[in-house]
Structure formats: structure tokens, C-alpha cells
Image (cartoon, rainbow, N blue to C red):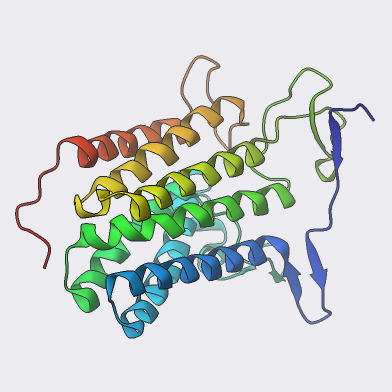
Length: 274
């Protein structure tokens, strides 16, 4: 093995007999637990009740998971709608025999859209502030969660990078490969750490949280810019594209970046926060 080449062949789950505990699922659970802890500290700082925090957790988990799953199916695997419909919403596959798979096949673009919708509903039903107030704060734990999701993808040997054409890279043994690829999942995870730290800094050390939409916009710009550039070394997912063209992930990232810039530099709230 070369000095800069890693042969990657981990176990993906722990077989408990009646149930397979997937490490990918554990990464999502970890993301939500850490996110809840971060948000608890933010709510305490804002003087919000624990009851509203509990409701936020429920809206977040249901919204993000459902949106991420639907996003994957719509953008990358639409054949599931006709071939194995119930596997879209359940952690099982039915085609070719019943099997517990855990929740896999989740798209971050779908999760982002669903997060906005779920936060709108949460604000309307529970918080009664401004939807941007909650979005400006919830993006901080979301950014931390993105780190663990990409680590989960790496464990699963999915969303892999292109071949490096050199001795550097990761050989995904479970895919039957012998040549190193870019560990695109780890590139993203590493960059998302800085996205989280930047948002965390702006919330706690500056007064930017008082500017409605700024932190939300900053999150969109940072996260989707990272996604856009990492896509250049990422293998296409279930789609064909010419080498000169942008892929689906990049085209879907551009609107988020534009929206983020709008909220950072153009948006002016019509009314002040309560």
C-alpha cells in the first residue's frame, strides 16, 4: 500500500440478530443529538421555553428526514416511485425480497427545502415569531449535522469521488475497486466543520443574529458553495453528463447560493422582531 493510499473496507453495521444497526443511521442520530444540544444552548440564551425546543426537535427530524428522502428519489432515483414505492418512506426494501435497509438514499437538497418548510410550520404553530428568526438559529446545528452525515456516507462507501489518477486517494474495497478515488465525502465533512464554526462565531461573537436572514443566508452561501466545488471531484449519481457540463448537484446548488446572497445583502424585513 502506498503512503497516501488508503484501502477502505469497513463493516457497515452491527448484526444484532433481529436487527442490523447501521453506522450510517448512527451518524444521523448523532447529528440530531448534537444539534439538539446546540439548539438547547441557543434557546436558553434567547429565553425560549423547553417545550418549544421539544417541538422544534420533532418538526426538524420529521421534516429533514422526509425531505431528504423525497429529494433523493425525485432528483436521483425516480424509478423507486413505480418499482418499490413503500421503500421511499420506510427503512425497508420490498423489491427482490423483504430486507431492513435503514434510512439511506438521502439528498441534502431535499433536506434543505424541507427544513425551510418545516421551520415555517413550526413557527406558525408553535413559535409565533418570524420564520427567519428560527432559520437564522437552526442553521447552526444543521451545519454541524452535515459533518456527521458525510462521515456516514464515507462509512457506506457512497457518494464517492472520481479516480485520482495517482497514488493518493481511497480504494473503496467494498465496491470491488483497486484504484484510489477522491474521498469526496471527507472533503465535504472537513469543510462543513468550518461552515459550522463560522456560523457559531457570528451568532455568539457578533450582533449579526439581530439582522434577520443574515445567518440563514450565510449558511446557504457557505454550505452550497462547498457542495458546488466538491462536485467537481465527485462521481455522478445515477445520471449521465458531459465532462464540460455542471451536474445535478451543482445546478441545484446555484439557486441556494443566490438566495443566500439575497438574504445577506439585500433583504430588508418589513417588521421588527417581536
